[in-house]
Image 1 (tube, one colour):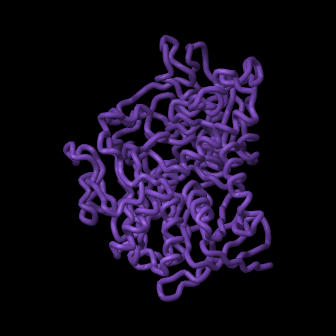
Image 2 (cartoon, helix red, strand yellow; image 1 turned 90 degrees about the vertical axis):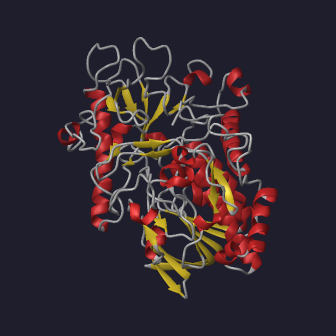
Image 3 (spheres, one colour; image 1 turned 90 degrees about the horizontal axis):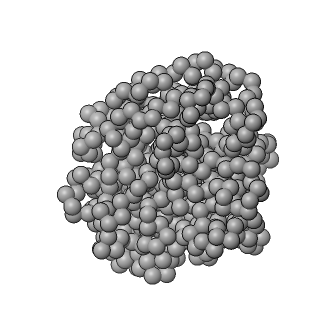
Length: 543
């Protein structure tokens, strides 16, 4: 096996949303970066996972970092530059290519990928950045609580890379670097006795994970029959009855599901819409639609394109981490098979909205838009929850949940390195807990949640910061993960400049305040929500 040794100021393991944000911030601050990614596409949720962003209503003004807003605008501009938009769509300042309900920016996953690649291009050409896609970390060398090097292996060839740097960031979906470096971490649900969270269980359960989902894109081709061979295990999955507390309303392959915001009451959805509905409130098609054909000149696109990330594909058949490697691989394969079976069910057995029969053979998989995988699905699974560092400070339910704040707003942190806002949105878990969904007040990202209790040169760059199983449910979304990554990348750069480890910056008020001043004044990262706002002023409508 050929081994190449590479070094940089920062080594970022995982090129998802937070990893890319960390790399951009560090590069623009003058650092050199090595960025690795398990899949062929960088960008994580935006790209390889085919998940349009879940965002707060103020994301284009006070609710995100400057770089995140730049990223969104670059995506919109790409459509203006390269697509035949209508005059109205082209002139819309907040162009939403898909007009999906979930976000004001629903786009084809290839577009954010290209934006990121273009953003990185000057740094790659100059030698400041090395991107290693289709690689996985397999081992580390750690000395005196510092990572010395990380070895990553190519997943498509006989090649290894030995990576060295001053600081190592974990931007992976599952916390891969955290695990192999021996960094203290938590997984699954913590016990009430550990966190004091009112909603935590009596006993900890490291295997109680929110379901992962393998998403896919599809369009509509009238008067055609696109039904392919019946997938393996179809009968097993079409008859699958989730064992849930509270109960799930029947089979998972159904238009009936638990309503996350109404105490899991059964709710009937429709592929397109209830025949008597005048809006899109009952529709799954419009929820995460990534291309609205009416945004483009007539007849250019024969169909809308939508991304399927619905309750019906939440995979409850096993965990993707904290189990033996072969079991994790088998569970991922089963999750992919499960999503493929659900698509077949929609084509062949799903009740039609107008009650005229069963099955929508007109549906077509658009795997050509999600990386041309053999099964036509997204390259990577959408991971809602992975490993989380044991941090100097852990964000708890009682810090952010509205029902415990009594109108005071979320806990205020004088070490804040950013902000976020989303409900505590916990999907059904691998241990049979149904949806749990609680409002939060607009909250902050405390620096202490980025500082491991022991390791000196390793930082989290995503949802693997110091949160719990519960608060992960509100810290895992695109703009928040981006902010975490940016802050982590800039903290590593500051540590190099100050010649002080991140935990020293955190504990020294002078250094901490200087770093936070830089975040706010130079990097344009908001550290607190404007005082005039509260949850009641702009409550999220779509979650």
